[in-house]
Image (cartoon, rainbow, N blue to C red; front, side, top):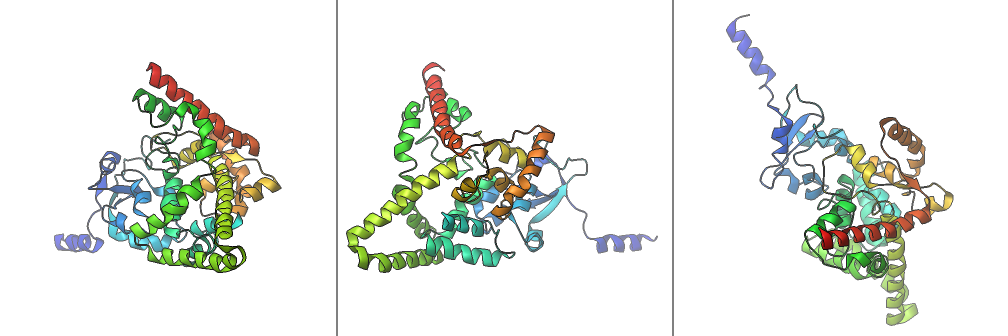
Length: 378
């Protein structure tokens, strides 16, 4: 073949792809430059993070890492998403590189949860629209706030500084064995952590919604200029005021409103924390997707009451592995997940409901004592 024919064929095929190693990708995890890997393709997300529909933080948590599994888990229309990813593609992993990093081996409330996870309709548009309606109009909270927090939690559960669900460490609680000892060695004491299993009953379940979330959600939407969310929230307050104020008066209405928030808060904290607080809590160690989810979550045994009371999220392991799966299907895949864990020696925890509640208190007591011992003696 003539040289000019070879050159023409090369130009038609396009430029040769750039190849990178895992070390090169891992170095791009700072504020100025951020890369990640999806299905061996290397993407530069440095500018895109501000435009990411799921929020900037959830995608930033995987900067310098492989994001294949969370990409598959979080997106229902992957073909459409890949079209937008093409402009971010800068190369791929070198052929000699492994595919994974060397370091890796109340029913309205649950309904909005389903819409937020895109697990009701087959299209994202309808899920997002109904999510705004249910959480905004029926619950009085912003969808953007829920997405901002919850997607990070699913991406990096129980990872300090990446999972906002454990942001109460260290200012209110000392969580997890590793972080508690670390806090004690640093001689830090923001609260009397050795008594945290007692004051949990005062500032945990009864106070989270009425004394914190109730006010923070308004700060969130105003500070981030989420005016659509604010409009949906206003429809909630207009509706309940017009419904109950004429019947109960101002004092009666406020009493009813905060009593409902108080009861909801107790239920919400116990149900959501029983699957995570007693589990492994640590800094992000960049483990594989399955291990990350299994070490941070546990299940509560299936029963008619447990399924109803927890909105089927007693199958928390399956929910974290397959976040877009409709929750009424979790019990169908649970035996498959259990057999997979048994095959590869991964611990799969499931316990009775009351034991799960008690483990929250026991784990707080244990981590508080670990903090005290490190604080006094190390």
